Length: 154
Image (spheres, rainbow, N blue to C red):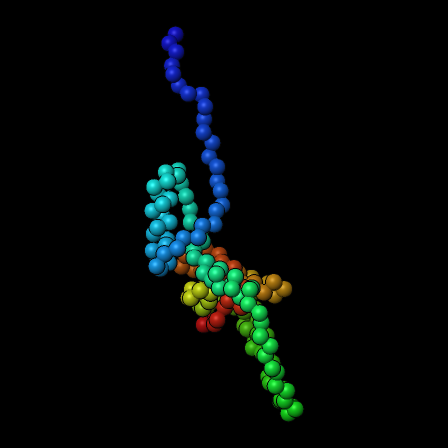
């Protein structure tokens, strides 16, 4: 029998969720710097789950600022009642699309300038949670959107 010099210790993998603030001249430069640092660090694998979160410094300054009083002008004239908002119309239209299983295109505004144009079929509407579940016909994926993110139905 021969003895081998194999190590019996095994290394375990660990996953950490970390928020890192990287400064740069632009978003792309900061992302490039982060990727470069991660590649040089010798990690087995990494995943950048979310994009750029802007405005942290602005939020901190707003918390420190003292709100100014804004005078409210009071009007005595009675304003005429406007027609009911178009939200019930949209809800009825969504329900009709679900019943017909019709192909529609929705325009979604995700914020931070991200706009999506999705050809889809509506699967489910949760009126209580104000959520809309759609099936993207090109990507064959299911997505859920808040109703306030949806700009238009075509």
